[in-house]
Length: 95
Figure 1 (tube, rainbow, N blue to C red):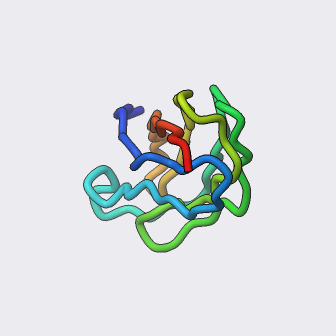
Figure 2: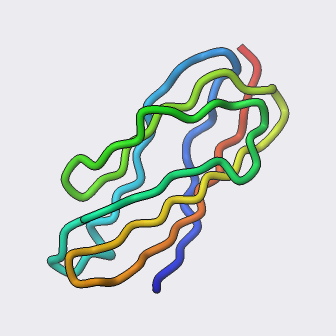
């Protein structure tokens, strides 16, 4: 099991934006077979539309409370049977 903290760019409160976590450096030639994405600390955000696109897991964040920081937990299972976990953080800024 691997773990890494990955910063996402700032999110403007009230907008809907697609973000991605790229696993290419962690896959060692494997592919993503399954994923879960969840908000651990929501900061007023809503998460939707998570999907796999090649080596990336994409998801949409919408809403948000300016001044707060969200934490997203992404877990993937690879074709080699490995479980990889990443925490991503996203600061919510005013519009």
